[in-house]
Image 1 (cartoon, rainbow, N blue to C red):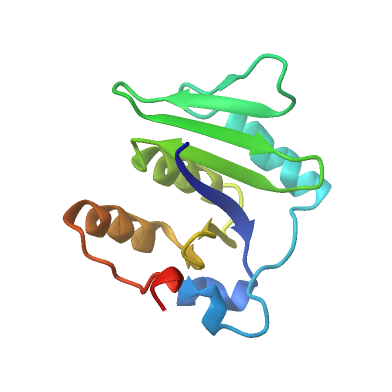
Image 2 (cartoon, helix red, strand yellow):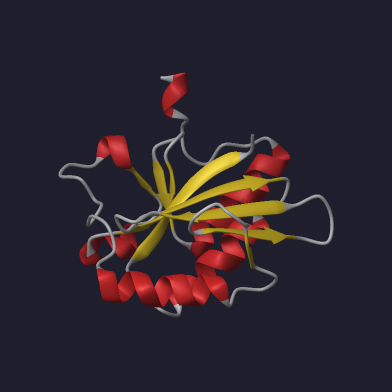
Length: 143
């Protein structure tokens, strides 16, 4: 099993405040599932994403593999959500997110294990800090 994330809609006024610890923010910063038209545009961008291929017999699931052992599985749900599972190459998540931001600006990478919403810059910092063992935001499990 790899790291799990989601691509989520964020309330417009909060996009500039990322990263954001979800537990410390009230009301909920998420703006709900993607609507039909926007979800279709995002799904199209995912299908056209670098090296993405549909996983046979699995509904709306796609696989992206990097040159090494990196692997990103993308699951599009029928109710408008985008879930990710990444193994060994978090840069794949960042690359996908950057591509999806070309379609819709008001999105974030949700790290639900740590309760943090990221933009591209904060996720890039998370990757670097994770590699060096530093933690830019407290892990809720450590509280």
